[in-house]
Image 1 (cartoon, one colour):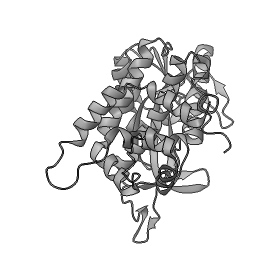
Image 2 (cartoon, one colour; image 1 turned 135 degrees about the horizontal axis):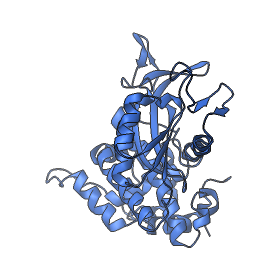
Image 3 (tube, one colour; image 1 turned 30 degrees about the vertical axis):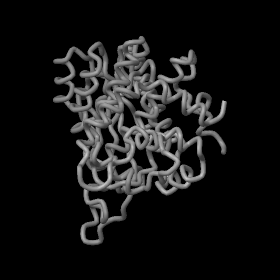
Amino acid sequence: MSEYEALYDLFQALDLGFVEKRLVRSYGKRSRVGRPHRNLLGMFKAELIKRLRRIESYAEPYRLLEADDVLRSLCIIREDEKPYHPSILLRFRRRIGPECFQSLVNRLVKQLDRIGILDSETLVLDATFIKAYSQRDPRDNSRGYSDSEARLRKQARNVVLGYGVHLAVDAGSEMPLAVTVEPANVNEKKAAPLLLYKAMKNRHRWKSLVADSQYSSEAFRIKARRRGVETVIPYPRNQMRGKQVLRIDRKFRSYGPSRLRRLYRKKSAVERVVSRLKTHYGLCQLRTRGLRNVLSHVLLCLLALLATALSAIKHGHTNKMRSPVQLTKLTGPK
């Protein structure tokens, strides 16, 4: 199977009719003044291909589309048309907006739920951080220069300028269900309530929620309990002293009730999802600025991952739904 045949199979897994209707509704009516816009579905495919191929720059898709007729056909570019210029794709992402991409993610998650892939009762939360496409502002060292919404975050011994990507993942299937993006200095506790709300909106059968001690907040625990979800979150040393509760030491060893320790081991599911997004879907290759644009980039990465999983399932390879290398042959060595 060639790489482009794999792409055709992958796009067939998506309900392209629904995608096109949603894109048209979000892009708005065509203006009577000026040239008509390019094919929306073709630009959407070009954005996903950029992430599936781990292409860093937007100039590279332009070069590939200029040289390869099969890829041009896949992205719905006529013979008399030029490839999608980087500025055209930038305008496309801004006009479509993260709300449209979020609705497409929700639809794919519901498809996975309907076919029985999301059979776990455990939801896992975690955050990862991506560097901003900007340098620090010399007048205000805490923010970005060309991206004023990016903020600093201390990671180990380094200080990173960027954004925090907060994920909710199904522990059994290792499929992402919800995401929020915040400036890097926003603590996980503040992003957690919205993340839980989005995950519960897509699926209501969660019994337990697993997260690390950064999410240890009594207010968040109460909100989860009101929704009927048990929180499996380690307490820091300065909380619940003398109580037999779940704790994690500096060497990441767990202590406390054995049932909670077993549930806490499922936290590795979200770490594997983050690794796949960064390794195979270009999550770290941020080439846009501003919180809304960064959220659009993250949602497109999730769409590429979910579409790959659905394509594997529909072609009878459920055991390969987490492996883009085996299924698409796109992210291996060129």
